[in-house]
Image (cartoon, rainbow, N blue to C red; front, side, top):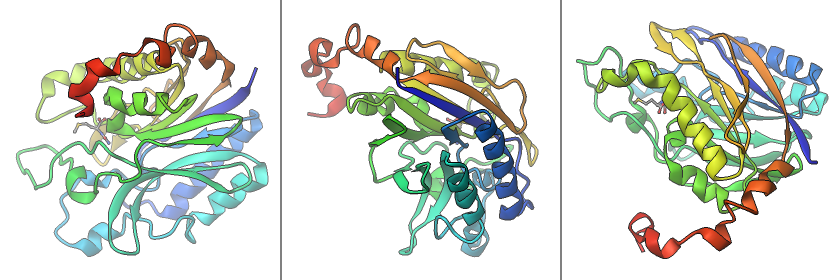
Length: 300
Ligand code: CDT
């Protein structure tokens, strides 16, 4: 048995006017709850520090810049890092990253229980559009505000196992998980902000929860890994974001689920040894995959 107690820290809405300090306070409250339940690792959502700003078109870079972190930890996020280190608990956190040379990424980091940075991921599948489209009830301008991630789908040793990260729309693409699966991933951490209404395809709206669970459960099973999916949920600045935070075992079964659309911490004790049972049988990649037949996907 290799047990990791993971906490998924779902967030309710973050208002546009909410300060970083106030958001970090909310994150710390959930960190303390997680520590009280013996968690080793807390997973926060995508863009956890601000409202989901790609819903707006900003004319001025200065207005946009307010949503990005130039350093991590910075003065406003340092208290979260300090508290986590004091409690001896690791975490993964999504945020908007502005690099010193002016590049913008939708990023998540993995921090160990000693406060050390274990890994970084920059979102690869950016949904939405690049130009303002006033016909929409709200925008989804991730293609305008972020570059596609340039770090690949890496995995990191930590928490007694092998951990990977992806972000929101990445969860809908099987390649995301398979690239990490081929590196022996045992737990994939992913935060999301998913408006229930998709303006170009409103006929999908009623299926939001089904698709959320469908993609994460199938990926967990097909890649013999735990998946921790964590929402920023609820009615945020007039846009309803789905909840559906859940922790999924390599069996494909959801073993813990959130029941609200607010700040809510759920837990699961995950035996990473369970991955082996699937990876050494039905999904023994080295014995059963047929990469020659996949050339259309790999472009080789
Ligand atoms: N944040 C994010 O990636 N959200 C997307 C919305 C898709 S509709 C443009 C998602 O896949 O959940």
